[in-house]
Image (tube, rainbow, N blue to C red):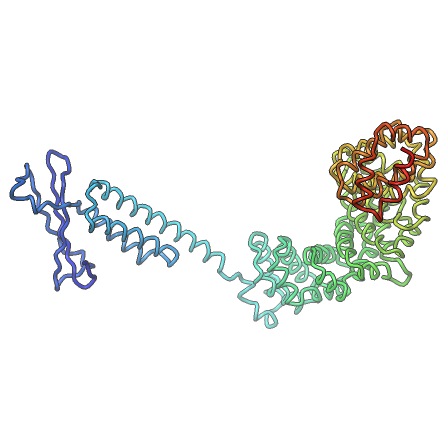
Length: 561
């Protein structure tokens, strides 16, 4: 057995006519030698000529060239010196494998294969070492403290010029490397030099770079360092500086995201009041208004924030008025219109806000946005959702939307963007709510190809239970006044039955489908078509599955069949 304390190798090689022949390696231990002492020459004995089988029968040995031995020990050296712990176990395993191959005399392996294998391993180790060195160099460069980090604890002692210079240099760094460790430095600078517009602007630029990546560890650090309150304080001190207001809104938007806790923290810090106040101060700054509407839209997801936005200002509803004014002043900006419609849509989830939005001209602003940006499916989608929310449980708003051309605008959006699934869903939801008003039902029936558009949507999105349910509601509301049998002749009854066949487990589709067939069966023309389609099995199945929701309507239709 080879030991580290005493081992000396002798390698024997044998060559004949340029061809390698069989050889064997033997090891002789010596108490005065060390395996690590590579300076001592090895003994090599050449055996040229044909072997004498009688004399050498018991002395056959495998040999290996000295360059193999050197490569093996070079590998060992590379393992111990140039590699970190991550690669040491791999290198050690490879070396042990090579040594075992020699010690156990693997007779079927040609010695040249061992030589080439050891050389290959050595080259791989060198390549690995080079890559590791390159990585360590890059990591060292990244971990090197920037001028701003070095002066973090010294910020209160430094003058404003030094801090400003450090933040200017840091802007170039944070643009590429968004590290949470920079946040503390930047917030300290903004807090201690809150009166300096230049420093606050640079601090906000750095925060915008860092938080714009939406990395959760950066956002968490920002909140823990009281960043939300620092941003609010800076907005108060520099209410007339549009750059600071823009960056503040962008930072707020990055921080709140889908985090309900952060949304509440922004409201508690007075962020909503500050944003709306800035909107009134800077009505002509398009980029700021776009950012402000986006933040308010996100904040309005929270029910408490909806109330705060509506109650901001001396007069009730100033926050809502500010959003609508921005839409009216910048009607050509599709970004602003989308974000403002989103804000109104979320605010309209509150019943009192629906009244305020409609009274402040919100319906007209939404319809103008739809007219101005017919090619934007996203804008049309958000606008349809806003109209649906405004019409929810509010007959006055339903009438207002219909009178101002909302029905035609929704149907037009459905025609222009048949492949926009969300738009079609929100549009059907809006029409279903609006159709509960008699005047709107007439408008839907009289609209050019209005019924055909709805049926085409049902056929295209047969797998959407929402689309099918809302379409059934529309047809059920229109049935009583469909004296011309438009629904029947356009294929509406067949579409209702197809929806019920496809969504057998949807209580909404089954109940609204049974109800729509019940309403349509009151017309003789429609009853004839229903009998021809023969939906007895579907109605019976719906009655059995959902007796409380479907039995009454299904039984009413079955009696007539």
